[in-house]
Length: 189
Image (cartoon, rainbow, N blue to C red; front, side, top):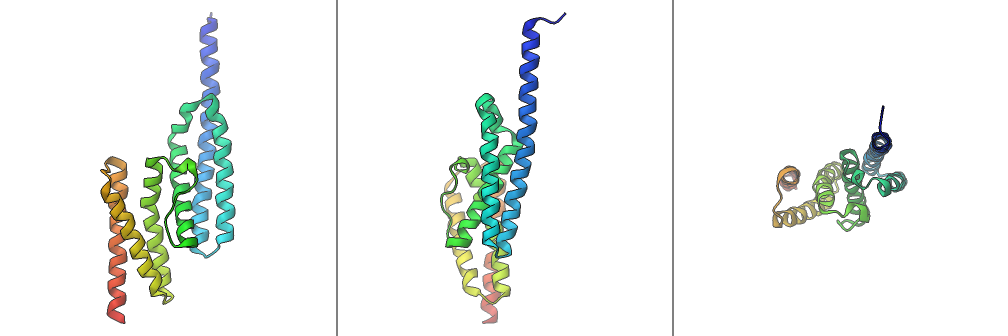
């Protein structure tokens, strides 16, 4: 015979697990949507990118409704991964639109989320620079080098460890790719 305490705990657990599964599903959708926004930007389709970013934002708003009952779900791995991808997409959108890195949606301004997204954005800037160099737009490559240098200088000021250190190391490799690209361009001029 189950006690009423056991029944209550079982019900609470089942409710939380249902909410958790929904968060994971929604977060996976948000992550995919943010990735598609980045790909749209690489195709010079800012309108689609903006629409996809708006869609991702709506998904996050929906996820956050569950956090009222289960605040710990805000730290669910799939949700945090989706936020990082969303941060990367927003930062890259800002770079493509305005040529600079800036503040983004407040939900992505938690240090770990922003810094991971910022580090990953350097890779997207390299991809864009390669495309621009191929098209003969060498000034864009120089702008990319300058921007990524600024990001790296900022990240050097922080004592990044663990996961963020790995992201930082990837960002430094991205800077090296840009520097090599700039050097190759200088040899051809």
